[in-house]
Length: 105
Image (cartoon, rainbow, N blue to C red):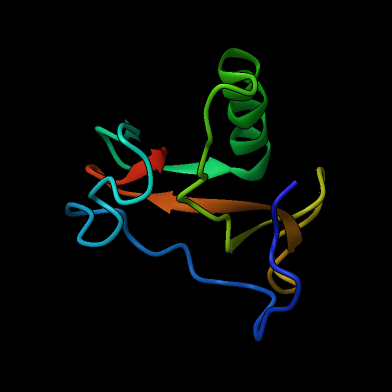
């Protein structure tokens, strides 16, 4: 699965997902692509599942580019843990996707 090799900070703020994508909103490598119509977090597992599904259909006839990368860590505290004692440990990685972003080509 996709995740950064090295990060400067292990935990990030959640941020906001308002607005349209200003970068990565044009098809630049292939001739057609898959575009997001609403904002969301897409996990590394979801990207991998989509890659496997698309590659089954495309086989060896075409080429595929993944245009998003999960570079935001999402933290989670263990179940039945009292509040406080700092932020939880990184659980999984997500890519922040805004409307208009090309996901796959």
